[in-house]
Image (cartoon, rainbow, N blue to C red):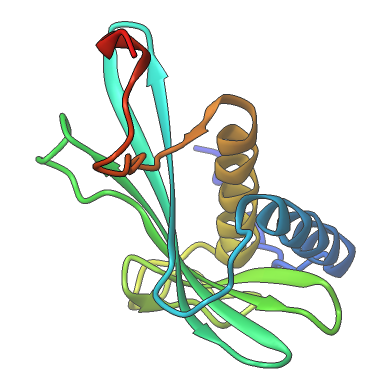
Length: 163
């Protein structure tokens, strides 16, 4: 009987990867979020042919001189049996970076977690969440269209009225 006694190497975060993800996510958010007023929600719909549309919401939670706090969440009508992803993201305007600081209402602050741990976090959880945010925002930019209601004034006439 041969036993494999591997020594588990400790995960070391790659700061260049985290930094480049942060810069790219900041640039994506700058394109998607045009108004940084607290309480404003930017919603994007994405449909996939026969599938119901998914909505991605980016809501401004706080806005300060050097930072903006956002809540990025997905709202699916068809998937009520599973909790949709929700991320808390902080944008740092002085260094033009954005990072995930919370996921599913739990704080994610460490760049590395020991494994195993009580919360069952992966050693590279912070990097994975920032990659997920990058994929999510890129998908919004490529396939999403902004969800906005169009308000018509009561005195206007539409072309269908024949006027």
